[in-house]
Image 1 (cartoon, rainbow, N blue to C red):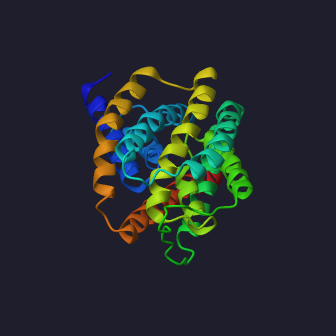
Image 2: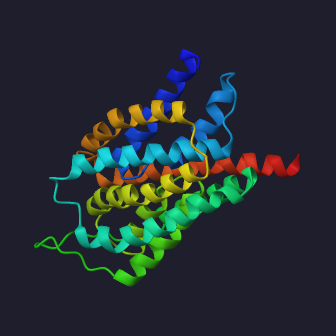
Image 3: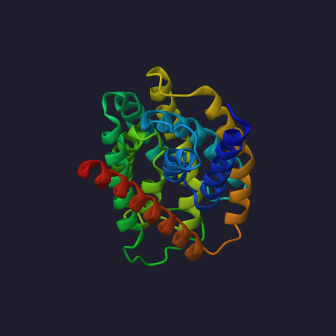
Length: 263
C-alpha cells in the first residue's frame, strides 16, 4: 500500500473519529462517504461499499470506546438509557451486519441514503431544551427506547455504522433525553452496537485488514480529543455541527444513487 494512501486513510479516520467523540456518534456517517469518494478522487483504487462498511464497522468500535472512556467520570453516562437501548441495538446490529452481505452495492448505498435523510429530518424538528433533574434521574419509556434501538441497529448494521447518527436525534427528539446525556450515553450504546456490526462484517468477509488498522489507529488518537472539546462546546453548536454533516453526506450519497439510476 502506498504511503500517500496510508496518509489519506489516517486523515479520514482522524477527522471522522474527532467529530464522533465531539458530538456523540460513531463516525461511520462521516467516514462512509469519505472512504467511498476520497481515494478514487485522489487517483487511488476505489473501495467497494462492502469494504467501506467493513472498515467503518471496526473503526466505530474504537472511536466510541475512546469517547466513552473520556466521559466515564462526567456523570452523563446514564445506565438506564444505555442498558434499555444497548441490548436491543446489539441484536439488531448483528442481524444487519450479517445480512448486509446479501445486499448489492447499490442496496447498501440506498439504505445509507435513507437513514441519513431520516436523521436530517429528526435533527431539524423543533424541541424544548430538556434539563436533568436535581438527582440526575431521567424518565424514559423503556419499551419505546428498546424498540427504536432495535430498528436503528438493524438498519445501521447494513452500512457498517453503530447507528448513533440516528440514535442521537431519536434520543433528543422522541425520547427527550438531555443533550449532554444523549451525547455521552449514545457513545456507549453505539459501542455496544458496533460489536454486533463488526462480528457480522468479519464473519461474512467484508473487512479489509490493513486499511482498517490504519483507520483504527487514527480513531484511538482522535476520539478522546473530540470528546474533550465536546464537553466544553455549547449544546446548540454540537447539534448544528451534527445536522450539517449528516445533511451534506446525505446529499452526496443521494447524488451518487440518482446518477447510477440515470446511467
